[in-house]
Image 1 (cartoon, one colour):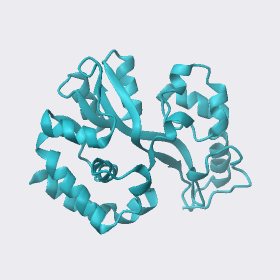
Image 2 (cartoon, helix red, strand yellow):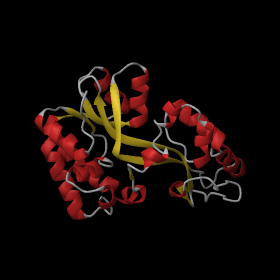
Image 3 (cartoon, helix red, strand yellow):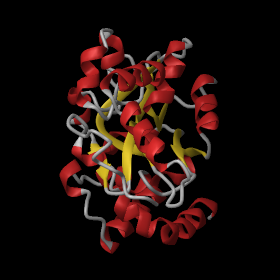
Image 4 (tube, helix red, strand yellow):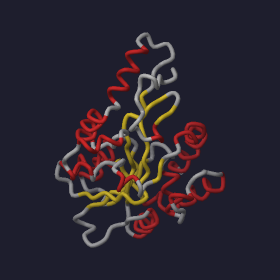
Length: 249
């Protein structure tokens, strides 16, 4: 990949955790505890520990079985680790996480694609699950009675990258700069409920309902765990085989 030309891409108001020598954040998205508001009226699981306890006792819950990332973090928080204690991931912590999943795997409806997860909630096959926040809000707008818990959510970012031998590298840098401006970030947030990477974007969003749905809105972001994409980039494939074995056993 080409290094980002930060003489072109203005990062003055961009969150530092999405600025990389070889990439710039597009948007934030999150995994959260999602629950049916018609079934959970007075109370709902607001921690992964409570999520695990409910799944063991009453389940099933929905959980993404496609890959282990995000799941390992949730399982550790279910074991009692605070957001600040989850990382760094060690061999002992990974063992704990897999042990934690052994408690709920048989009482869980595993989905692979986001569309499958949406269907589980829309058809009310589950009333509790781990799911993408933006997709949950899309379902809410269609009338599905769902709520989202920001506490102990896991948020991450997608990135703009420029191939090393891109023929129009200069224009690519100009586009990234344009897409990162607060006005454009605000429009993207309003359309997708994904979080802006530009801090000033919030000044261009007048609808409080939209603001409260965004993972990078300060009141939401401070309650969640920032996903360690660098660690997972190095270790995901080696854990994927074990993850798939666990789900099939």
